[in-house]
Image (cartoon, rainbow, N blue to C red; front, side, top):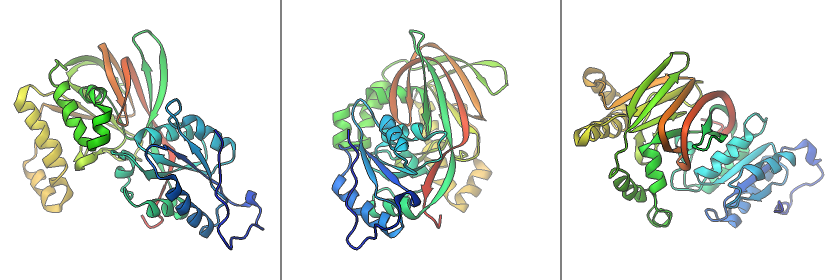
Length: 341
């Protein structure tokens, strides 16, 4: 595919050598964005902030963003704006790992997980583009996971928000794509109902950092770089996106009341009470750990599963795995955030 650049804005000076100005690239999912609106906003903000003309790269079913991001970097991009859903953001972030280029976000999906956790604007195109060109850099952690498949093959992927094995991944694998297009996150209700019909318990052998090998039975194990999900669900309340540590949770409900405990803990305590000073005082006085949720922290987690299990990263199903090794790359990704944040 060919990268394109919009013409200079009327009255813009072209006398300054482009080598002296920073260059941006937009990696966009054509299904999720209004390209003409993006180009209009980009042209306005790149000129007013002294950037060179931006280049545009289209994703495809075969390439969700990683390969075209590498093309953009080879062409000299100092910043890559990911315009698409969580899959586009993850693919761009993975390609940016270990480079000097920064990632800017133009949220365009149903989840927008990284943008939510960075408290960025979710539905304001002009504000998002302004942040890209006039904001500041912030280093955040990146998760890197080695995946072993049932046939013995291995691959490595990066994630910016969280990775999970078990029920949450099965839910994503069961999600009807057409229904998701029509009703967004409500499609996951149907997927959860179908996933819960099965016996979802998995037996796991694991090692956290250098703590020795242990065993665990759970429905879901999630390794998080940050903790906020859509619908204001705070799954990992103590997670920080730049502390160099994973937050990990294992869900281990037994029957209806076990799921009720999880709902109260995640939706009510984490999502509501923790957000106010009064609520935090209530929690300090009354909160207690529940056996249905086991929280932990660490920099490296190795899992070996009793059987092939569905696995997801940043809200996308990536097939089945028999073993996983997740490590933190501290400060491994630079993102653009508002200058006054």
